[in-house]
Amino acid sequence: MKRPLLLLLALAAIPLPATAAGDARWVSMDAPEVLDAPVLGLQRSGIALPAGFAVDTALIADAGLLPNLGVRWALAAGPHRVVVGARYALFVGSDAYSALINALQPVVKRFDPSFSGPSAYAVYGFSLGQLTFAAELRLRLMYFTSGSLTAGASFAFTDSWSLVAEGGVRYLQGAPFVL
Image (cartoon, rainbow, N blue to C red):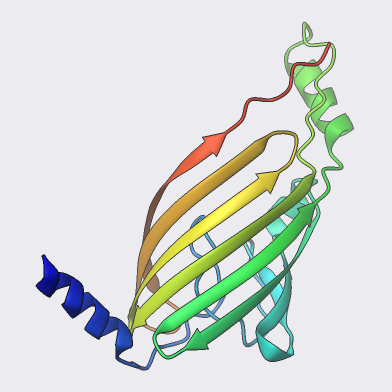
């Protein structure tokens, strides 16, 4: 039992070069990397700022009437990656979604979703060249409270192409009962 643990600790201390993965977004979690160039994408569009900071949004959410803006800070120290970030989303589509649901199901007189609120996350990653392992803890305080713990791995074939596998658990508080 001690030997595998010592081997893992020894591997963690080796400063290996890591390739940049590009857009700082995996499938459902934030990637453990410093955003060092402007990014334009559906899940993440952002502008890199000095000292590891970046301002970002998700265009697909913006198009879905959920404008959002986030700030993140990332640090790469040898093979270790640390990212912390926060985001605020403001749902402006209640009337449009309510009208659509009412048109599809006339018995539903009122549908008032509210997905506005803040979220925060922290990511730790460990990069072994083209292979990166990561874990993310995320908390969302919107209409309902949810938290998630996600772990993943990424293998970068090139700077533009990667294979990503993720899995995790999520806590979801039920929506409050409203009369």
